Image (tube, rainbow, N blue to C red; front, side, top):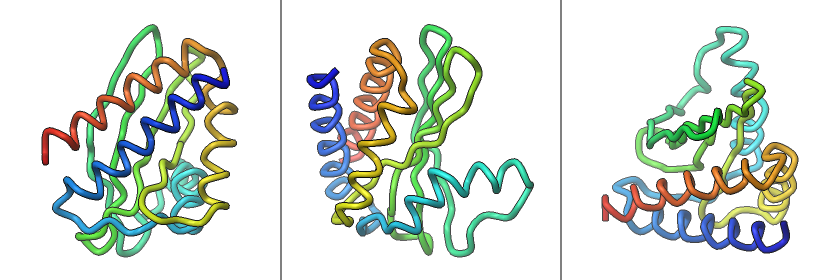
Length: 147
């Protein structure tokens, strides 16, 4: 599991690097507020039928399905021009949906730590982690192709 987490770190670093260099949007570091919005607040917004957070929008990147699991990736864009983070909506075999925030750019160590603590909780086994890594590499491919 430790090697898989190291691999995940490399993929996330590559996605962050590519999204910074290949985006037409400016990429600023993910704030703690934005991290919490994606990982906690977005679910409340959807379930309650609330409006989108003011000044923000989501843009679809891609989705993957395999072995009863599904993941959808979206960019969090601020003011139509600043790429702030990537949201991964992960649905496991049990049907439970979890919202992961993949922080981008320079961000606080607290945000980075929160992401790395959340992944093994949300992605509960090696098969699910392999699927997550595979789908994340497709996101990287998306940004490389845009470049």
